[in-house]
Image 1 (spheres, rainbow, N blue to C red):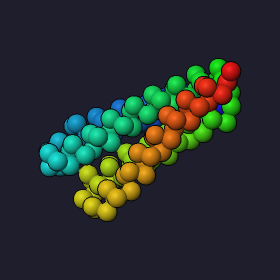
Image 2: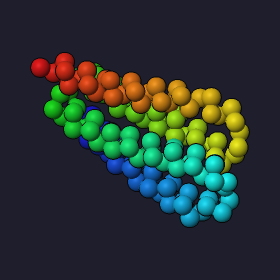
Image 3: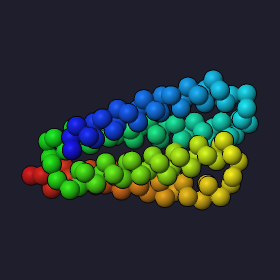
Image 4: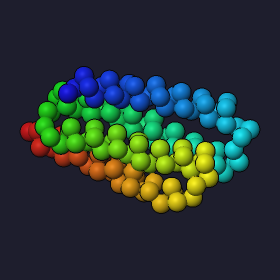
Length: 123
């Protein structure tokens, strides 16, 4: 699954750059400053955790166990839930989407914890 995590991380990095460029160039005049900041927060966490998936690929090659794989799934879920809800909130203004954002944040935290446990359980 090492190649799979690396490919997923690389693809999500590319998507993050694309969405960031869209936000910077396509949304600057369409969103309020507050909503643009919400969108940019989604981009920041999206990109940092897509890079985290590259770390998962490296860790899985060095310490292959269920914990490192779980970290990858948590990061993917976090990007979808945390960043995705912020993107949708910024674009649609639907406020209840902000209520699910913390679930994605918990996924990010769980991913980093699982990655740490995976390293510690290796040896």
